[in-house]
Length: 405
Image (cartoon, rainbow, N blue to C red; front, top):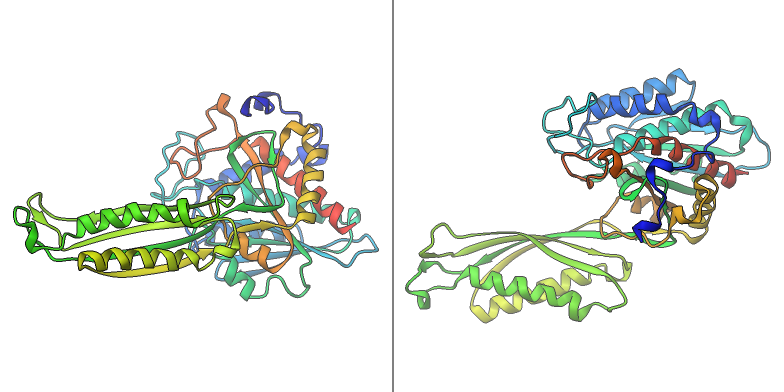
């Protein structure tokens, strides 16, 4: 399948209008400045200052300090005939990762890095805001551009919605993108329905009875109990989830014991759950606790389980997905560049916006192996082909024009 994609070195940018292509140097400059000053969730003060400064320079109405560091810009079109409101969402936060790239724009904040492309998302949203503010005659209605903090956690979408960013004026639909190094430059991943998964997490402590490794009959071995629990949890997806649906239960951490000849009295494990179908909300918590409780009872152990839901699945509206797909086809200008089967079990709090209003979240291919720009997201050497920035602005602008006109 990958072999059918366009070669990143020969991507045709003729679908990007000259006035947006001319913005490319500025898009790169903004992105690299943001990359040098990465900030963690709800700490994006420098990022917010840069955004607000640019919006003020361009005479764009905006509100700052929403959900601590969030910003909403409002751009009204001059074309008559539409009162609709389209929102565009971009996340701003970085990750607690030490960057290993040797580039002039490397992170200047020790232990913090834009390793997921949010610096690019912000630059694309800024470019879109600037272009729309200079071409208000090309669209009617209103565009709201939402610069959101803390997508990587604990989540900024919900508090922004609670603060009223989808109101006054009321948003009719919303779009957003994610630069995606799982797709090469010159492709767009867009589909209706589930795009990204729900994410839930758990911590579990197994409480046994410690003792000598040579006298196991006097103990309740927390390690053995944990091993049984971990194996049994894998049966949930294999035997309790409809095979037509997709789901994942992963135990990512296990800590137990202090010495090779001492049977551990406690073991701690933690894990993550992912699924697309919203009907499974609440199901995994119930089933995981049933399994842990049953195994602990059979061994005479006790347990302490913490379970919480983080993000809902990202579910695209069919009509909005079709709008984005049709626009992307005009920009990319080849059906090979549109990737409909692009689901991932990664999660995104864009899901909360999509629960509130119809919308579409899509992937913008950004990998270019020929330039050594293909490291995966959250890798300390993550980077992307900045040619994608102008493509992202063009898709956003065309989506605005098509939806509001």
